[in-house]
Image (cartoon, rainbow, N blue to C red; front, side, top):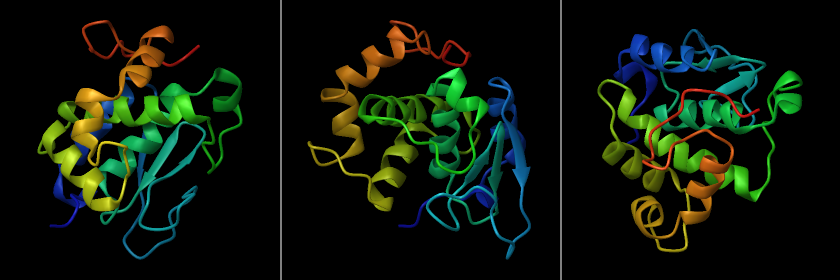
Length: 162
């Protein structure tokens, strides 16, 4: 199995999702360098509120970098260029929020996100992203609720961390 790429989904769907957080999706031509890619190509890049993707960029990568933008403090967002940084709690929050937001992208889903995260090599104590999300992510969920990014019912609040 391979991971789903941005060329395999309607980019307008991803663009609409990101716009709810004032993130601008920038499409990079195939074969061109991806600005702001911390992990290297084909991973998504982020500079300020612009998310850069190519056709071969994994959808999970686009969500992951976007969720860093959503989860980081205002001060860090104001200086964001390539390295999203963040500590353990934020990283877990980013993974959890990425899974929740995957349901809002046409031709993607939470189940596909679990498969792609596992295929790409995300590692979790319980052996899979789905097991982590369902059984071991209380700290990530609570962190997102504390910062007003999701509700107690696990619905996105559609705002950035303040």
